[in-house]
Length: 132
Image (cartoon, rainbow, N blue to C red; front, side):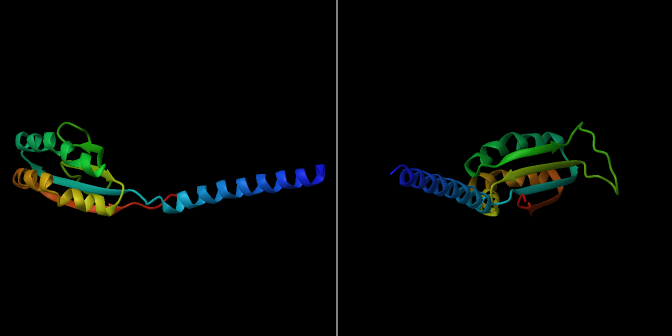
């Protein structure tokens, strides 16, 4: 009887470890890589752009987006190749869908004209790589 009990306990422990391992592996596979919206600004009106910058965080919240880092105004940029832009903004999102949802949202559409009229540059989405 003791042998059967030990065998059942060992099988139960093995199954539990297997289930935990499978869940951990599945979680890594399901976790999408980060997505970034990158904005490079070559020319800007800092006064108007500041008004825009104050309004952006509220538009990001529903999409779980957040500034990853921001370089503009008095921040120092060191060029390695070519001329650096005057400003760089990187916003992190959980998915392309959330990034596109933010960009097309009514809240962002309402402030986008401020950015377009007060700066000249580029904005694009970059899909990150999944961690290995």
